[in-house]
Length: 327
Image 1 (cartoon, rainbow, N blue to C red):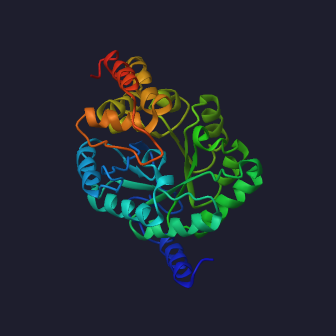
Image 2: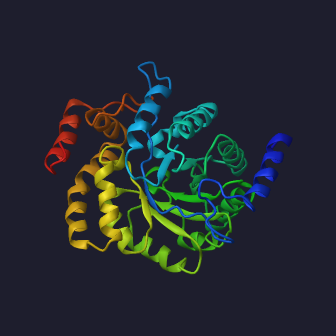
């Protein structure tokens, strides 16, 4: 159950959200926060003994802070959030808030399997500095996660969240897409500002943009592999794992799309497809962390049960980057 202190925080947060303008999440009377831009989904560094390495986390953030990102995503899939304790999840958000530039947005993944736990985590993340909550679809009982169930879940979370909510659909990890009809309904909620769609189906992205066009609702592509196509269809940015190692290039692709330089954008997008696939669906977080090590960041080990790459996988990863001119 939500305790008295949590409910008090919820009420105070909702009251504040009606009147204050904090780090850009209210851009005008009756207008939702603008989340447009590029966000790297920050990895969680671990020591050799599998403890969270907060020092390396801060070092990575200081380096990433030199790029023109809109902000950072923490506790997304690349943050290995299912392997963290609740206290670790909150401490990571707090440390990121302290280390990142103050003019950047902090989107924190607060999703849990139950609605109650998600509300509690969202409130707690707001208290430690998150500007918005990115809420992944609950999926353990995916067979019962109908549109009605998901609309109920997200509505309750958004009703009680003291910060704006971003929907998060990542079918590769959850086994389900947030249905388009549910997205359209939820886009009308005053505290739901947008969605991160990692499915890679650009026809679906275009349909969501089209069907929510009358709402103040923004869509973020969930990968650099389809970033250009998403911009062409009306997306406003992306949460891109590749931005952790090729931040300048992903931001350049954003700039080319926004200025209508589609031929140059196409050339750059082509060179990013294989490296992006390597650090996402081919080799996942272990591949991304290995590339971070090679690009001067701290990647380090993953937390078990994730395993490091084999020598053959490392070589294949290297080829995907060298063949496109990035190593």
